[in-house]
Image 1: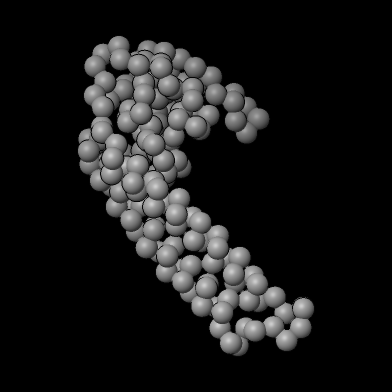
Image 2 (image 1 turned 90 degrees about the vertical axis):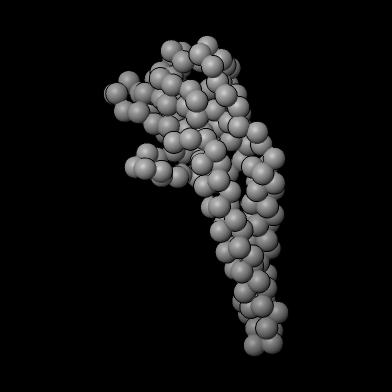
Length: 160
């Protein structure tokens, strides 16, 4: 998968998520302020709960808005042989069982998964445990990652 295409897919998905969250926040705000939800007693908390939901969705929309700005400004880097991994690297890893995974080291939107031509790529950030491990490594390097109570060993197979 070419990184330029991957970048466009990430931006598209963030735009879709942003629009959905704004709509959801608007609906939750309407529920919080609707006259039918004005509490008659301290035990009627529907409006209060809806306002919490609206605020959470608005906060998440702002995070996505910032991620969109980050991806619109980021320059995709090239990685010649022996170059250390840094932001915008598309990395192929192989674990000790021979399973391969592909990750894209992006400025934001960690955890997003994209599929292009049957290949799944997960977006990670430098702040994630995996992203932190990868920074500065290069093809052929190995490292261990601890998670969910077990240790996994990975080897860097390719960097684009």
